[in-house]
Length: 330
Image 1: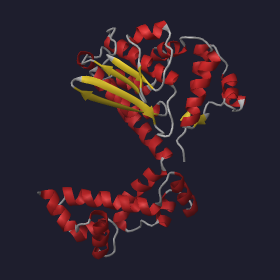
Image 2: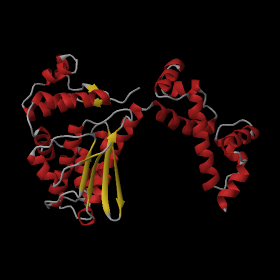
Image 3: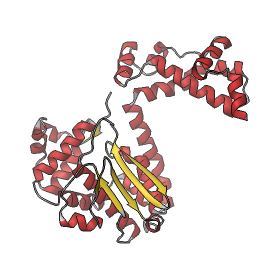
Image 4: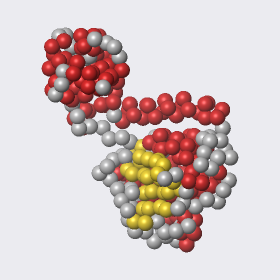
C-alpha cells in the first residue's frame, strides 16, 4: 500500500499564505473541490508533488517559493523543525531533521560530512518520482532560513543544486548567494565553520521532552505505510514460539490470509521472502554476537529440526553456521 501524506491542513495554510483557494488547486489536478473541507485529506507522494506544483501555478507570481519559505520558517509549529532547533550545532540539527523528515512529506534527507563541509541532499521517498524544481527551491530557502534563525547568523550555503533548470527571482538568488547547479537532486552544502556553529535555540531539556513523541510518530508512520515492516517485527516476536506461519501472522495483524498476501504483493514482496530474510538477519546476529549453540539458534528461528537450519543457512551463504561463525571471529 502506497504511503499517504496529510494534505488538508497544509493546503489551507499554503492557500492563506499565497492568497489562493484550495478548491481551485484541487480542480487543477482533477480532484474534487470538496476535499478542501476535509482536515484528514491525504494523498500519495505523486499527488503531493502535483498539488505543490498546482499551488505555485495558481498563485501565478514570482517569489512564491520565497514567500512560503519565510512564512513556514516563522509560522506553523512543525515538530521535526523544532527538533532541529533544539540541537547543539547546525550539523547535529540538520542530522536530527533528516531522521524525522518523513513526518513532514514524501522526501528522504541525507546529511554527510566530507572534508569538514556539511552536505545535505533531498530526494523523493518514491524513487520513481522526481521532486518538482520549484518545491526543491522552497526546500533550499526554507532550510537556509531555519539555519539563519537558529544560529543567529546570516550564513550562506557554499553550493546548492536543483533537479532541473529554474529561473530564480532576484530575491531568491541573493538569498542563496549563487545560482543552484542543475543536477538530479536537491542539495545544499555548508562550510565547516557554519556546520559547527552553535544554535542559539539549543535546548537539551526541550529535546528530551519532544524526542519520545517524535520517535513514536515515526514508528507509527512506518508501521502504517509498510506491511512488510509489521510482518518482520511480528516474526521476530513469534519465531521462538514456532507460531510463524502466514496464518499465524494474519491473525496477529487482524487480517485475512488473502488480505495479507495482497498487501505484501502490493509492496513487491511475499511472506516467504520476509520469513527467509528475517531468519537470515537473526541467524547472522546470533552467530556474530552471542555464544548460543547452533541448535539453540535453530530453535529461536522457529526450525523444528537443526538440519533444516543448516540447509537454509548454506543456501543463504554457501557456508555452514559453524564455518560462518569461525570466519567472522577471525
